[in-house]
Length: 74
Image 1 (cartoon, rainbow, N blue to C red):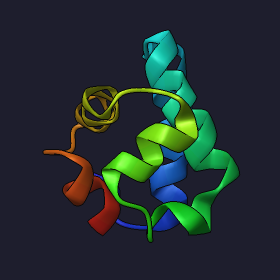
Image 2: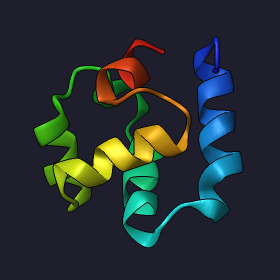
Image 3: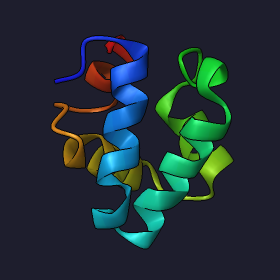
Image 4: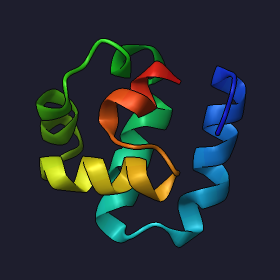
């Protein structure tokens, strides 16, 4: 699991080609709005990325996190 913000974004970039199209929307939003995402709730991120809340959870799990909260903590 990533230990720094830089590592986290590197992890997202490396996983990007293997993500589903909808999960890539989440990745794109996060990479473009890095500072903002930490303050967002899952419902806000899902709406901003134009995906469902379960898609956000799948995105987080694709990066080996337990869920959105675990992702945000990293």
